[in-house]
Length: 288
Image 1 (cartoon, one colour):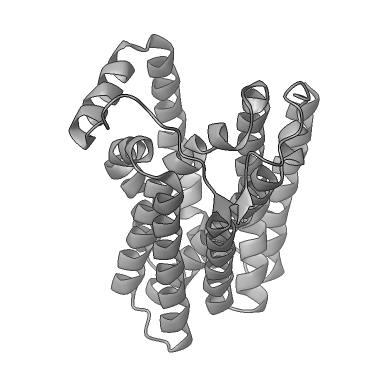
Image 2 (image 1 turned 90 degrees about the horizontal axis):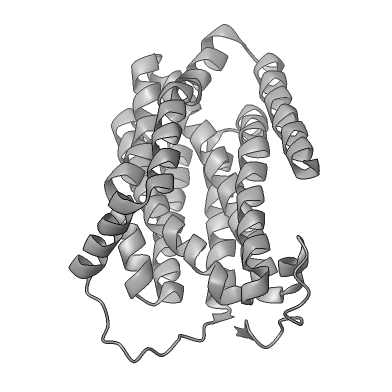
């Protein structure tokens, strides 16, 4: 295993890319990036399979909802657990769960046994794993880098999320069109296996506290109390809900549109254009 603190560069090196000089942060950052890309590939494949097997835009939207609803249901619980349990073991459990679900989806697709009902159920299970893992993935950043690099490390995490969002759907479209959905689900499983391997190699140094451990209920109440009094956080949440409520229609029904209004390379080219637009926007934001 790798000791995350032993290989850290001097604290004063706090440039925008400095956190990537830390071996463990770099490994986990790349693993999370690959995992996020795999998740987008999985979402594209799931929506495409549902569109092909049912021809119903409602069912396509349902399978996409099964991915996002767990975030709404489990976000508070996941954040609380990320604060009170061993984050390394917690991430191992969540990544192992998602690896299992992705492998089952690939196997059922290969055997032509993935019914629409099973697809919704397994997509929901995948979404539950992702919802439980995200707070812990964000929280471990402070354990991987020294304090002067924390802001840069958080920014790099955001960059990784946007890179995956930009290129993941295009990669998923190419895989589904050229190889089939089973390969897309298998690709997702491989990314979770890589994440599991990297987290397994992380030798975490848990901080000792003189205070008694906080229970789940107390931690949940503390989080809700903070959110109720943080005006800036509330403003961000309200604006985010207002945007994603309408923007979600494109993500939910995009697969149905591509499936029925476009065929073959037309859909792939459209997805590729979206990916290039996202990358271009990312570069512009990076220069700003």
